[in-house]
Image (tube, rainbow, N blue to C red; front, side, top):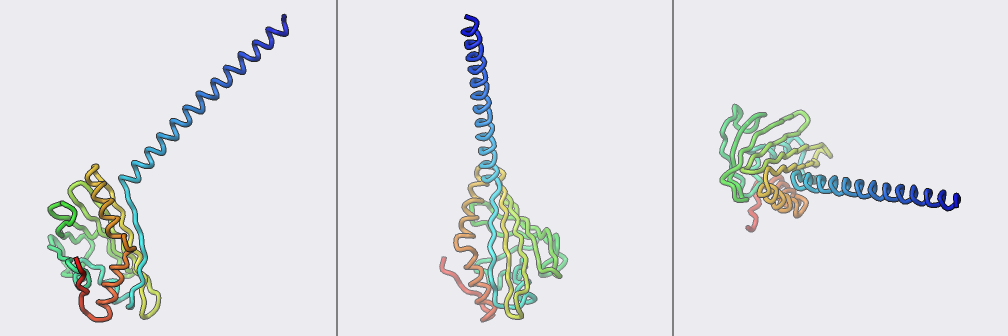
Length: 198
């Protein structure tokens, strides 16, 4: 009799222990799902894309082509309206606008960082419901080649902004910036802008 009571007591404790472990597993699973959902939401809010392109010119000649004004030499359709700048070509804190191709009336751009000595520039761009940064760093490869590292970091401020960012990121990086490389190299070789088929 006493043996049976001890066995029932052990079984009862084992059941409580198993039930407790089951609840613990359920809670951990729920927390994991919440963290995965949070990561997915963060990924939707923030999109980051990066590519490197090899350009056929010395860094001193290539880097200025990523300036707000100079880009029009190689980028088909690139037009800006300068809002504020003390320098006619490019300076830190320069403000300009461009037309938007994604449903917004216009985009506002700020040169948020410019380091001519290290050949890097950072733009911050504001749309209606989104913003993004463009970091460009040019590095010496040889007297005739430059490697440009281009990183876009998009942040959506609403569902519509996130959708526009995803569409834009996919469009810009569809060919891993090979179109940029082709246009810039064409300009470096010919001094002319390559007109693209739209």
